Length: 567
Image (cartoon, rainbow, N blue to C red; front, top):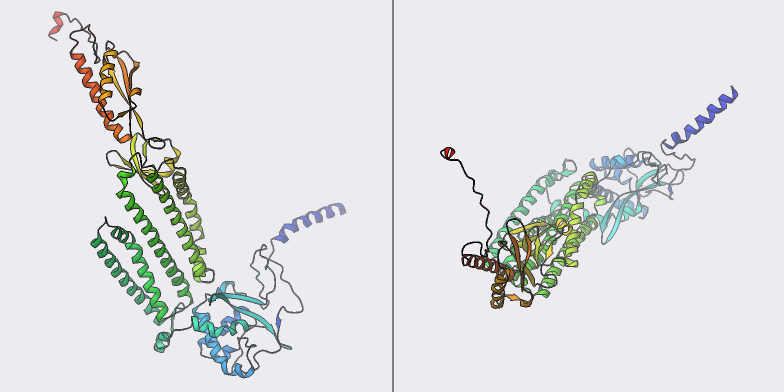
């Protein structure tokens, strides 16, 4: 029995190890609180009424907002550590500093109440074991950061204790010291201060009534400015025409400039006339900045594309000439540089938005974090697009196909007109446009007829009778080659039998042309000549069994009995 009890105890001990690891982080308990010790707290004034509840971070903010919204500014000021001021200055500035603190906290930061500890020691009992602060006491909490004069200013609270007193949570003295500058930057504008009092009262969420009216009004004015900009750019585009460089650029930037007018006019009116409250600023601020960055980036990218496309279209026929190797290299490299510029502009724009909007301290970050799953799906779906981008750059820098090159792709003779991010635009000999996916184009075989030497050999097969005199036909062919100025390398031209079957034999004529375009016309002329010559020689031979040139089909005569002919 004793052995069994010992074995059972050992098993329970092993089971207790993983169970203990799953428990909440251990909350330290000590006799001395973790605080900043100060000599005195706001000895320069005494606030009337019930003191604020300052024992926990959450109680501090709740009681401060309650007192401020009731207009009890002296009581609200007891939540501010004014140790950096003399007692006389504390008495004079307490109410003003409390009002400034309320305006900034209410208008410019988004407080996460769910994450705000409601314990005197500020221990986060919900934190993961991997969090280095899990189970640790805190005496300082940063609520937000505001950008001020190229420096980040924290809005923070601290746990303080004066000799003989109880520990309390208050807005830190560093935050209080920065209040005048922060209020100048993030406080209400002169326009807002002139509004009637009832318009400045809170309507819903944290929006005041004047904000509920002003935001739609400003958006409507910005939309009107965008429409007028679109019409003005459209008139300029029509005036210069699409073939003109200025007209082409105006056509390309019409939509981006309209978007820039929308975001820019909204930003101008918003910054000049008023400052929005925290949640509204947290949403509209990053959105406005993102629209401006997107619009400016689009203006740059579309302008570059318009200039390059117009130059390519104007010189399309010249680029395709066999001697224009340098021109094809230049336009292909310029196309690659254009795509790199697009990528760099996108990355730069994203960096500007992330840095300047400071979304980690605004409601915009919560919105982006909430869309994390969607972002993963988009990133997964974008793998193919990224692969196409790399493939298009591979084509441009490896020069497997240049703008203006003649290629034979999927049984079609085409010229490369444009190399884009995801597709190549190919122009066929009959002016049709083939949009070839970049990944498929790179991953499949194709013939580049102008990669090294534009000269091309054309092969023309002709089907002849077994009795055809090839030597006689070869003399006619040699005379044609000697007289045709578009055939080069005349000593390499030849006609020879390459195959035969039960119906006849196959002869093939081979000649060289200067380039694919000339070669096609010459190829057709040669075929017409061979057919015509074979017909003339065939007609001149008379009746069989003399030499015949065009194939004959054998006829089988069947004798039908007389009694069945009527059937």
